Length: 204
Image (cartoon, rainbow, N blue to C red; front, side, top):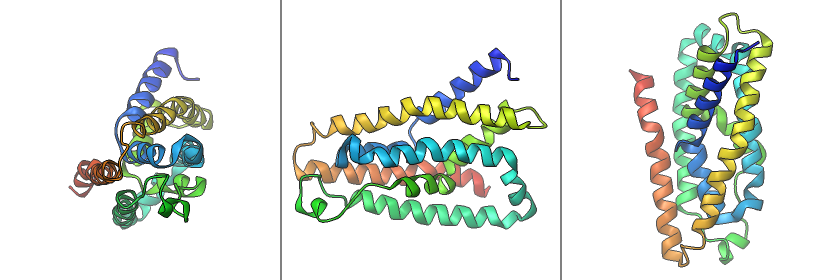
């Protein structure tokens, strides 16, 4: 059983790491602004359920696969960058929700897309590995792994909603198509830049 002081430390880490800027949060903010809270809900659930599931699987031994096949992590990193650039392009070219282009079919990430994105997001990998190695006993009993995932899930409901609502509120300030485009382009650029330090450290 995890001690109270370790639980408090874990909760603090979970809050700071999930609340701080990163690919998930920038995408939620952009989706909240472009599509609103309700249409972003599947995206939010994909993160809220997908990341804790990732923590469990990492805790149960996914990292052993990368230890056994060293180059597999480099391949994952390349795929991550490619997918992030694609998502950044989708954000940069997204249209305001009240335009004809939006009504004709552009849509936020689905539950499955958002859950799958956790596996190609360098920040979530760093968070999951750090949480398991720093806050779980060395033998990593199943109970402690699930408890860590639960803490992230509970705190994630606050952080995920906060970034989505922030984007939704920005919608009231950015009233012109030009303002929407500028915001989306900035989000796309920051999304790409947000993973650069982690990628650099990973290739060192």
